[in-house]
Image (cartoon, rainbow, N blue to C red; front, side):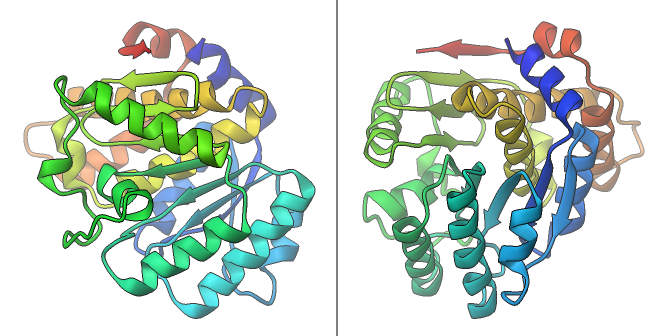
Length: 273
């Protein structure tokens, strides 16, 4: 299943407009290229809608947010909806400040998102009214475990049903769910936490996958999470003893570039609920 989704990405080579975090923009662009897509990075409100119209899919990432960037996101999101282009939201740091939280809520009110990818703390801040003090990372109490997995799946599916979207909650265990199904992805490795922006990269990767597979959004988002985890494992396997997180970051992108459908199917570790 995931192998065919990857094959469609390689075949279609979708153009993705990324309004993303400048801390990770280069890595996001490179992982889009590595997967087979083509990135355009533009966040000026004077051109954002026009650029969106040239592309096939849209990523909105609220990292390093400012008013002009929010304006560009609103314009691009509305344009993408009008053109029926897939749109993904990465609400980086939602709950960390009132400005970020209020801005994300504006986006949610004005734009339909096909996928929302976030950590569990961000999801709870947006949809459960929980206050957080964690910055942009999930707090340790929001770890997904075997014990709380059924509860978290139920929460995510409830939100997905209300918004008619796919919710991708990522961390040590990833849960990707719509109102009817949930994929639990267990690929990845702990070293991925040492690289800033692996979540941003996953959101960019998800944008490529859902754009190339618009009739299978849930499976496509799950496949993207699986690809990221598998490639983290491959990167770690090839890391030399003297190499650290910078080399590891590059090896993740290399692994995405070289990944084939057969390897993905062999290494994929997931359950469907």
